[in-house]
Amino acid sequence: MAEVFTNMIMGVLLLLCGVQDFFKRKIFIWMIGVGAILIGVCLPFNDAISIPERIGGVAIGACIIAISKVTGGKIGMGDGFLLCVTGLGLGFWGNLELFGVALFFAALVSIVLLMFRLADRKKSIPFVPFLLMGYVFLIIANKGISF
Image (tube, rainbow, N blue to C red):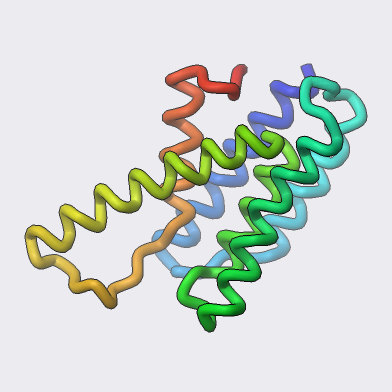
């Protein structure tokens, strides 16, 4: 039951942050913090994923935060913080899968934008909507995320 709540919290968090990122190009850190706290409350009741696996999931987000600092913000730090929270809920492999699917969707959209000359290679696009798309895709495909 706690796994269901964790997945619902992540879905709502990704939806709220995705809408905000799409329209405002920024994410409120307090929103991510509330999501992390709510997922953290569910963790003692959810033994489907081990603690080391969850730490590995958070490490994926931490790597994105480090890349954001190295690149001077070319990748948003909010994306990294959000991946830390999803890593807490999904574990290493689930979060890696989510990140990979989101990158795939972002690449497809970028290719289409470039093909139709709606953007050049310097244009940035919000990434959190792609995390949401990836999360929905994984739920539909039933790849490690279940309700």
